[in-house]
Length: 316
Image 1 (tube, rainbow, N blue to C red):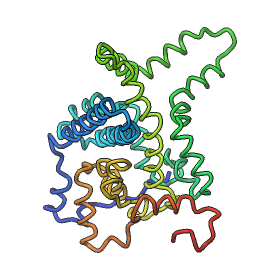
Image 2: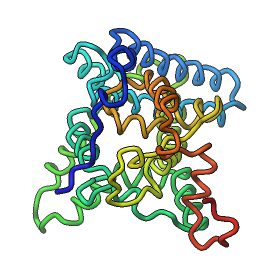
Image 3: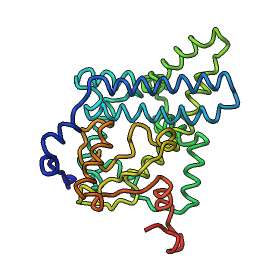
């Protein structure tokens, strides 16, 4: 198996520089989790008071739902909190959850990034694709088709494969166990909001963003991180991509510095809030031209959808 190349931080940074970016705070990760939930609550309140703002609320909430997944990802690397036991608890119960299932999968991705054994290679290998194909994917995301397939595809395959006469109850019980967090969240939210006539809040202001906007921006994030990166790439500065993001992109598409993905793969245990400083240090050392960097998410999308485009229109 071809393990992805690694860089020793001591070869790039002074001890003081490395200490400044590798330090794990006991409060910043928790503050980011609180920020995500407060933004979700504020956007939901806005939509309840002013229903015409519902489309904007869906985008804001969807962005923070991805943000909670980003913070769970930080917990996967032990970077959410300085105490590892609390790190894992917060990553499991204060974010999107699923840490135990996600961690071995994701660490395998880091170990073999862009190599044949990389479990995420299937996400980047098809690119570039045609603009028409990309539009179809985004439409499926925004109409909930992607979410439905991901959430219930396992159940459908289980039902289709079950032997004749096998009782249905064990299959349904297992599926309900897999969805227990979603069901608990729904039950608690409905119980709290129903007495105020807001029983619909969970469906419209949590499930709808999760099934639509979050799916689309998760795809955009996946594309930006590795699409177009060469398979079997051996240069650690080019195994993943950093994409510059402005304030609107950070609010709606790239929360909590997830766009600094090249730096994350080079130094995967850095907390997300230290990635911008790591980026600046690398640029200051003249390593920018060696890194895989794009100027915007729009530029990345043009690259990802350049198959079949006239050579003069495809980005370099």
